[in-house]
Length: 146
Image 1 (cartoon, one colour):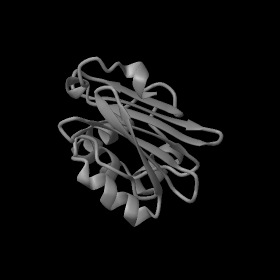
Image 2 (cartoon, rainbow, N blue to C red; image 1 turned 120 degrees about the vertical axis):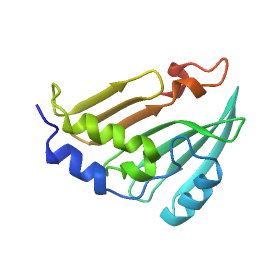
Image 3 (cartoon, rainbow, N blue to C red; image 1 turned 180 degrees about the horizontal axis):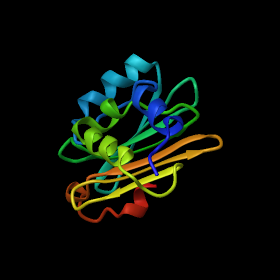
C-alpha cells in the first residue's frame, strides 16, 4: 500500500524544520531564530541535547555529538515538518520508501546500516525519529534518544 497524501504531503510541505540530520550545530541556532522557537541546550554524557519548541507546540530534539554534528533528531507535534530541512540529503531515502508499497499508512520505518527513520501519524499529530547509527557517540544508546 502506498503512503497516502494525508501522511506524505504534509510532511513534505509542513512547517520549516530545525537542524539537518548529519549537519552541524550552527544550523540549530539559525533555524531556531527563523522559527521563533524557544531553545534549550542540555549537556548529556557523550552529546548535547538541543530542544526547540515552536509557538504551535511542535518539539524538535537534535542530538549533537562532540564533533558538532547532528547524529539524531526526534520530533512531535500537531504540525508535520519539512523533510528536506529536517533530514537533509537523507530526505530522498524517506521519500522513496514512502512511495514504495509497504504495509500500513500511519507508520513508515526505515532500518538501514547507515540510516534509521520512523515517522508516525497519530490522532494528535506527528511523531518522528531519525538516526545515523554509524555516528552514535560511544556509550550512547538508542534508548537515550527517545
